[in-house]
Amino acid sequence: MDIKKSKVIIDGIRFDSTTNEVITGEKRIRLEPKVIQVLMLLAHNANKTVTNEEILENVWPETIVTSDSISQCISKLRQIFNDNPKQSRIIETIPKRGYRLIAPAQFVDEIQNVQNELVITEKKKSQKIRTILSTIAFLVSVLSIYGSGTSWGIGIAIVVAVTTIVYILSYFLVAISDRPSHNIKITKNDM
Image 1 (cartoon, rainbow, N blue to C red):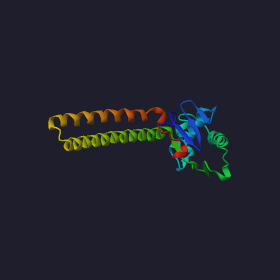
Image 2 (image 1 turned 180 degrees about the horizontal axis):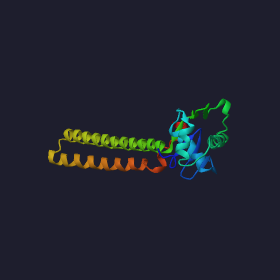
Image 3 (image 1 turned 90 degrees about the vertical axis):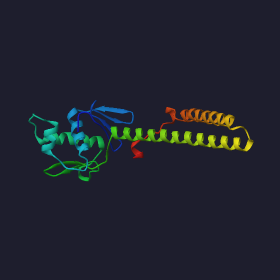
Image 4 (image 1 turned 180 degrees about the vertical axis):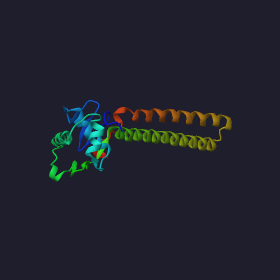
């Protein structure tokens, strides 16, 4: 877990610890690195209580600070989320212990992995289509040769030629439909 090199989406808001930015729609806000690091630590431990000691060890190693520093970071995060500490929907305070992120956290790498899996699935589907079309062309060619009484030598040449042509055409047809403008895009709402 690298809290300094993570990108996460929480409640529709994107946080990037590599640039210390919060991205909401077209708006970018730069935050103090420690605020982002506290959020990333909570996100990596979503739905688990992260104690004040764990936060201090991970965000302020080898530095002496009080729990007030943590409280200030949590307060800034709650402002961004418009989260009420008394009726929290994002960051819950665990009295005298620490904090817990109770909203779903989706790391950007996970979203990209799902997108990649969908693209691979689409390519496999395209390959199946080409194989089916080639098989149909092969069977139609064989049946037409059998029915026409053409010699088997010429018939086999025709079957190979027709099957190859159909396979090549299906490859180009599928390739055209696989252009980037048709790629599937996933947003947080799709998850």
